[in-house]
Amino acid sequence: MVIAIYPGSFDPITLGHLDIIERGGMLFERVIVAVLCNTSKKPVFSVEKRVEQIRECTQHLLNVEVDSFTGLTVEYAKLHKAGVLLRGLRVLSDFEKELQMAHTNKTLSEAIETVFLATTTEYSFLSSSTVKEIAQFGGEISHLVPENVARDLYVYYSKPNQ
Ligand code: PNS
Image (cartoon, rainbow, N blue to C red; front, side):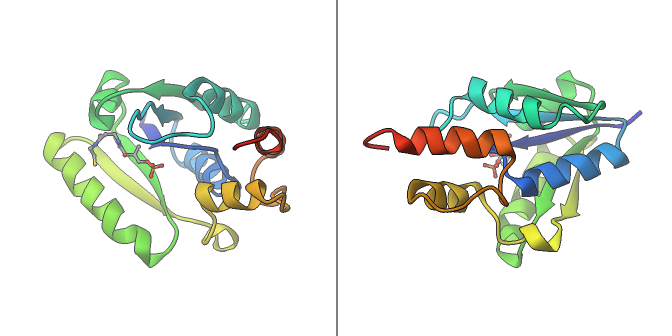
């Protein structure tokens, strides 16, 4: 049984992430979506909120779990007996960072493989930061993020000084 970890910031989850989760769920017995508690970035949503958002939009996927973690991804993977780190590749500019991460993780744990899935074409240029920028100016985001996330973003940006 191969368990895959899908690590990320997910601030917030987009339809591009969801596409990777759904396809990962078809390839692996279990997929654990792991939200990084990263104190160096100033997120829009708390880690708890992001976990809740992802749980809500993945509830139809029976082999998908959602969790949060601190520290190294490979250590979290080992703890959960996962053999694979799942990542999506959108455009060429992702490649350098992703390859560097994959190589670094390989030096930290030889047994854990990084598997890349090419993002579905329609989500190739989609990122959490683009979605936040559109939402900030009241633009349409319902075709870019799950419904519950679109609601949360509109609420967030409807408050002053965000
Ligand atoms: O969604 P992101 O921000 O591109 O995800 C990046 C993430 C969380 C996968 C990466 O920053 C990560 O794995 N951080 C945990 C710390 C770690 O393991 N570092 C070593 C690998 S570079």
